[in-house]
Amino acid sequence: MGTLWLPTRDPDALTRPRLLLAARLRALRERNGVVVEAAGATIGSLPLLEAMERGVTASDPHHVMALASLYEVNDHAARLHLLQLALNSREEGWWAPYRGVIRSWFLPYLGAEQAAEIIRSYTVGAVPDLLQHPAYAEKLIRWGHQGAGEEELAKRLELLLRRQRILHGADPPRLWAIIDETALRRRMGTAEITYRQLEHLLDLCELPHVVIQIMPLTVGHDLPRGPITLVKVLRDQDVRQVVYLQQFNAAFYPDYERRHLYVMDLLAVVAEPPARTPALLRQMIADL
Image (cartoon, rainbow, N blue to C red; front, side):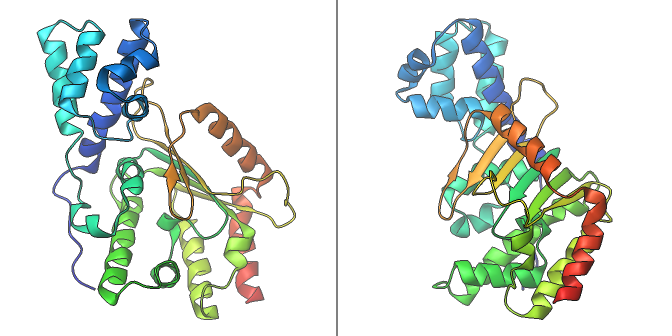
């Protein structure tokens, strides 16, 4: 594997403008009593407006200026600030060299993840990306991209390992992961790979900013069928959390974070407490 491409800018500086602009546009619209349908018509697309107000897409400066006029933002400095946020929202992150293996629907989450203050996730089919051992990750990537060549597979693994570096930086995000027990007991390739993954999770439990809970097999009802990830990027109270729902070949960014916060809180109550995680992982290792 070649040398990883190192970032030349703070990833937070790349994601912050998009989320701040989303908060500003939403606040301006609500303050002026403009309904979303009218604002959407101004830029020609209601779904685009909703995406802009959630911060999950780059914003066209022309669209932002049209909305500023609709919201009666006449102060030159205020309009210039919105314009600068729009321009900055279109910049690429360190992941630009990997664009060939990144689906467009994954980019909004990737930007939020790399600038996150808090990441909460619930996974059912596999260990979360940020907690995967390299051998486990490689096996999972090969399984999910069976028609890909070796160069593409290596690039996908390199991208994932580069993403994981946020957990080991000077100011890492707080990561709270709830993992379904079936995902941990499912053998990924050889017993050695599964062993390495479980040992890797044990090591990660030692990090003060990482909390891992296991959803026991005995809880088999009323659980979400797919993974849920909530990302908080800024402490600004106007900036909403990014809700990321990934499916096999698509992702959704719904605009009702309170519901998912409630679901995540319930999952945390039902799952085994974090203090029990090391013992449960050691038992799974013994069961191999």
